[in-house]
Length: 168
Image (cartoon, rainbow, N blue to C red):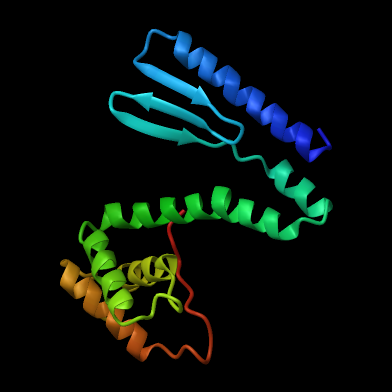
């Protein structure tokens, strides 16, 4: 559809149909459709399913609602991409998740949370693991955290951006 309201109604109809199919199945699922997501309860776990439709973003931009389109794209496209990339790196380096926690805690305690978002901290710690030369990749959370601090202290932030090459 070329109308944002019609597209959202179509997505809601999809949620309703998915909930109907899951509730009719023999599996241990309880599904509830709402206008903006599908809630699925299974074996003590809750899942919120949201359909990403690039067409909705384009229609919002065309209708002059660019801030809403950007927010939707960030929430439904960029954040999941970021999460998947960080998880991929942390699976390769088991100590990374604890190093991220230490780094986020340090940033918060030093009142830098307004300047360094959680995503930025995660990416900088990932950078410390992926490009650790002249050292070996950190093998403990403390070493990962200290490399994060070293990166903050020694990188020339004024001359250019920190480029982080994440695996696909």
